[in-house]
Length: 92
Length: 488
Ligand SMILES: [Zn+2]
Ligand SMILES: [Zn+2]
Ligand SMILES: [Zn+2]
Ligand SMILES: [Zn+2]
Ligand SMILES: [Zn+2]
Ligand SMILES: [Zn+2]
Image (cartoon, rainbow over all chains, first blue to last red; front, top):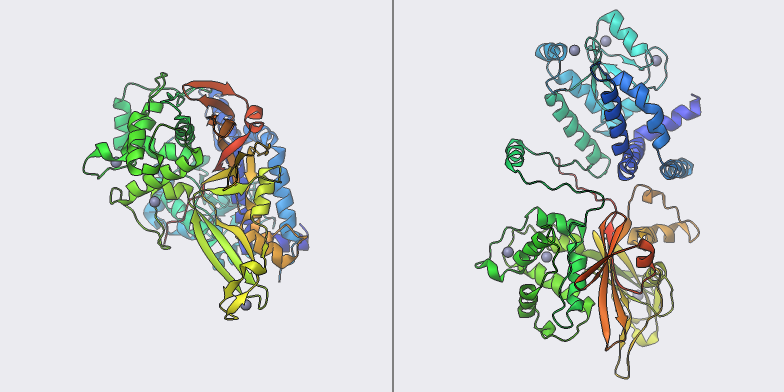
C-alpha cells in the first residue's frame, strides 16, 4: 500500500464515508437478493458436510468464490463510480 | 448453535466482564464518535505485517491487532490469548473452539453500538426482520392452518362487481389494496378502533376489505358498504353515475385520514405539527415553492403538504419530462406581480416548485381531462412512464446543489448516499371518451407479476402491456424503505 493509498484509506475512515459506502453496498446486496443466495449456498455447504463439523473457515473457503461471482455487475459499477466521484471531489 | 457463548468466553466474562469487548467495539468496530474514527483510521494496522487486512482482528486479552492471514493466530498461540474480535463485524473468535461463537449479552451490546454509529454518521437504521417473541412463537405453533405463498400464487387478487358505473371506485380500491405498506398495516391489524360503533368506521371497513382480499376466496366482491360509507362522508361523490377516479382517490384518502384523526386512532403529531396517521405516513410529501423577486433577488419559501402531483400532459411525452417541466423555474409576467416583503412593493418574480420531502407512495395524476367554460375534452396522447423512477432530479436539495455548482454539474456529491428510487406498482387507465368511458387498473401483485383488474375480471398482464397503456393515475412505491434512528 502506497502512502497515497494509506491517506485515502484513513480519510475514508475518519469522515465515516467508508462506513457509508459499506452501508450502501450492504443495502444493494440485500435488495438484489445476493444475501439470500449466499445464505442458500451456506445452507447447501452445511448439508453436504453432514455429520462433519463445519466451522466458519471451511464455510468461507467453500462459499466465497461462488458468492463473489454472484455479485451483480450493476452493483459493482455503481459502487466503483460513486467511490471514484467521491475521491475525485476536492475537499477543503 | 446457540447464543450462550462457550465455556472459554464465559470464564473470560466472569473474570473481566464485558468491558474489554465494549472498548474494542466502540472504538474499532462501530466507531461511535469522531474520536473513535480517528483511532481506527490511524491505528488499525496488523502489528506484525503492518497491513490493513485481510480481516483485521483485535485480541480481547491485550492490545494487539493482527490480520487473519496468520498473524492474529500466531499471537493467540504464543500468548495463549484465545479470544479475538473481528473488527469488520464485531464477532468473537475462540481459538480453543476454533470457531466464531455467539453470546446474547455481547450481541446486544454490538446492536446498540451499531445504532449509535448509524446515528453519529446520519445513516438510516438498517432494517431488522421481525422475530417472534416467546408468546408469538407459541401462538404460531398452536395455529394449525398455514398458507404457503408460492411464486405463482394469486393471493390478494379479487374482482369487484360493478354496481352500475362504479368502475371509478373499483380501480382505486384495487390500487389501494395493492399498496405494499398499506397492506402490511392492515394485515397486521394495526388499526385499533375507538369509534363508538365500529359499523360506522371507514377504517374498520377498509381493514375488513383487506381480510376479504387475502382470505384466499376467488369470487368477486361487492363494495356496497364501503360505497355507502364513503357517500355519507363525501356527499359530493354520492349517486350511481360515473365519477372521476382521481377525485375519488383524493376523497378516499381524506375520509380515511379524517377517520384516523377523530380521536379514533392514537395520533402522535410529529414535531412539524403534521398528522401522523397511516394515510399521511404513506402518502404525504412536501412541496416547496420558491418565489424570487426579480428586483432584489429575495426568496420567499413555503412548503405545503401534498398527496399527489397533478401534471400537465400537453407537450411532453414522458412522465420525467412532465416532472422536469413541473419543477422548472417559471417567470411570472407583469400581469402577476407579487408583493415582495423586502422591497415592500409589488414586483415581478420567478416561481419554482420542487419536492422538499418525498412520500413513500408517489401518486401522479396526468391531467387528461380539460374542463373549461368553452369545452370539455380528453387528451389521449401517449405519455411514457418508467417501471423504475429516480426522483432525485426533482428534489429541492438537488436543485439547490445544481444551481450552486453551475448547470453542467449533475453529480452533487452530497447526493451519493441518498436513495430516491421508486417502483411502479399500480396504474389506473381511462378508456374511451369523456362521457362514455370506462376505468380499469393494472396492479403489481408481487415483484414482476402484473394483473389487469377490469371490474369483476382479473387477468394476467405483462409489464410491457402496463407501460404501453394510456396511464391516467400512476402509483410508485419507494424502492427501499428507510428507518429512523431511535437511540439516545
Ligand atoms: Zn493478546
Ligand atoms: Zn498481518
Ligand atoms: Zn471456546
Ligand atoms: Zn375503526
Ligand atoms: Zn392524517
Ligand atoms: Zn424584492
